[in-house]
Image (cartoon, rainbow, N blue to C red; front, side):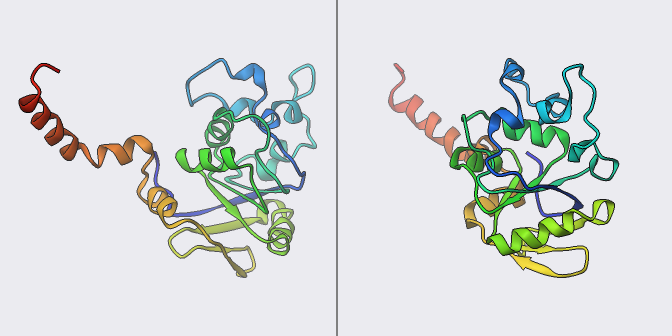
Length: 201
């Protein structure tokens, strides 16, 4: 998993509430177990018409937001079914941070496991960042995880809270496998001891 330390990028505004995981990555794209290649189908039904052509009004199809790395979203982002493909699709598109007033619990947890930083903020702070994001190409925002600060295009800043363990994992690029591998020596010692004490296993 890639480390998340400081991110400076364009923020795209998505003020819709209750953006569920089927909107993020529709069910027909869940056949794969690969984490790559899903970005092209992110928000598929909102991005494309029935003929597969881009809808020019959708935010991520607009030139200013095609390289967006941050989403500023409405309340209850990531609700619906518990598909891990949702953060996979966001990450494959290039989104590393989602800001909202609230997230569905399973989606929120899956983000951390995949290197995406979900930030919960009060409505007034989300409204300010949403207004910043609506500036288009000028909507450059910096997320400083170490200091837990978001800096907007005018230099104004907003602080955010995060669980210390999750912060540690993101800063060091540790997913569940990475955390386990940190204990590789202890695991090997245990296996060696058990092999001697219980050779029949």
